[in-house]
Image 1 (cartoon, rainbow, N blue to C red):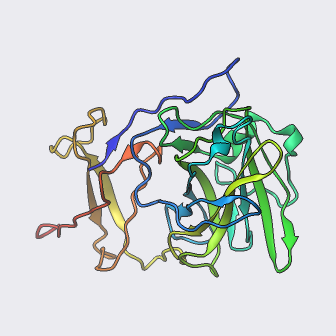
Image 2 (tube, helix red, strand yellow; image 1 turned 135 degrees about the vertical axis):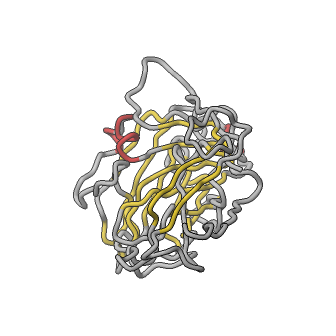
Length: 295
């Protein structure tokens, strides 16, 4: 069962910010996107991190979730708290973070940390989610660097800067909705993003290595199974209505193409938006029924 959870803004301070990104508080996160491995960075601890694309298709910008969980570190509630969250894409050749609208970020484009601005957050990130009841901390600004060659790989840094003592909280799960383009050459479990929480001196509080939750594959072809219709049914009548009752189950009615029908082994992914505003229950489950005779 899926139910929508009403989004509400997190922390508000001063004048209304130019932050074009959804800040969501929800009781549950995107299904199955939980942190995986961590990585030691200097004196920092490790934190579980993962990267969960909504589709496995390559060479197209697709929605994805960066997920991580902070530990019970005193540094998060210390003098300055977590001053910055830094995301490092470790192999741009295989995994690229794009603009939130899906357009490519030119390799030589950059916004310096000194010029970090809230509007840049909306250009980069679609949604920010936290399991903390106060929501994802409101950024004071975001920035990103140019693509940088490091040995055989090319990396790129993206940063979210927080106000003093208004950053990440300890023992909290976070999710960031992005758009990303994948290339063939990476697979399930490969680490594509480093996640680092930093103090005001630039020291690492914690760091994690975000591994892919799936193996990218080529897009479907003209001979692949196709759908001819897809509707949502929330009241059992088969009619499409507004989703305004969170206690109702969400049903999906779809019809395959007679010439290119859905076959056993086909993968169907439904993307509910906002991505972080839905609770899917304790497990992701789906049941398929054959069409009636003549359909």
